[in-house]
Length: 335
Ligand code: AHM
Ligand code: MG
Image (cartoon, rainbow, N blue to C red):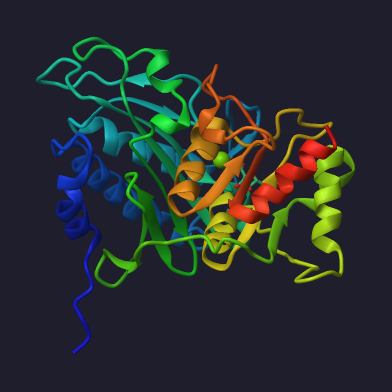
């Protein structure tokens, strides 16, 4: 008989004791994310059926059009995380400012803050391509009993307690780490439960896939241009395969399983790149390192960067360790 598959709920409970600061709070928080992910998944799956796709008319803090599902996902995660007595603060890529949460019965007694990109890659929705949710969890640094402050959110990535993503793909998966490796769970839509399908996920040390928006090539720094040329050279195991979905979570997920590198560098158009340090790069970097991969801005470890503002952007290079090392080497040489 095939062994019984563990559900995400069972896994969270079973691993609670190994959390560094085990009090059950982090488990409840992960369970809330699991719940919100299912609700958003249901809506994302219906996107082609109902009149919910298309720009909602609003623009977010970065001046980009918001799709309706961005708004929906933001609301659902916000509601699920704020209505329960679990966290003390929330910051979202879709909101200008962070939210301080004052739980009803005990004033500011919770210790975790969550940073979230509720629906990343949302420009892919109307063409039925995978999108994702990315989350990042920290312990607050200001005293319990007081409202959270900006500094609770502007922590270095290395201080993350947990991080993960949901990929709404051909299957929906939730992948997360609490600093003890990376595990992936696949949703069985008939039952509504996530099952442990990818235990101990790891990047192969090397890979043959590179993922970058080459349309921006002309605007890239010389080090990145040279690295791309290196990927295309006919030598050893090269040329590498080019795969770019334009949905960070999906590109990362594929590269982690198959071995590869993802690059969103700075360019003459976007001097700091496009991706946000707090909502996208730090959580993905934490997962990458926990899966024996690497994440860098070309020179510095992503999780060592001290954030200065909520919506800060950074150049992002992430993937199989040897590939990221090589890209850094090219950046150094062209400095
Ligand atoms: P978003 O948060 O506005 O969706 O932007 C982030 C997305 C990433 O998922 C993706 O890797 C990147 O933007 C694609 O950008 P581009 O279309 O410039 O290649
Ligand atoms: Mg995003």
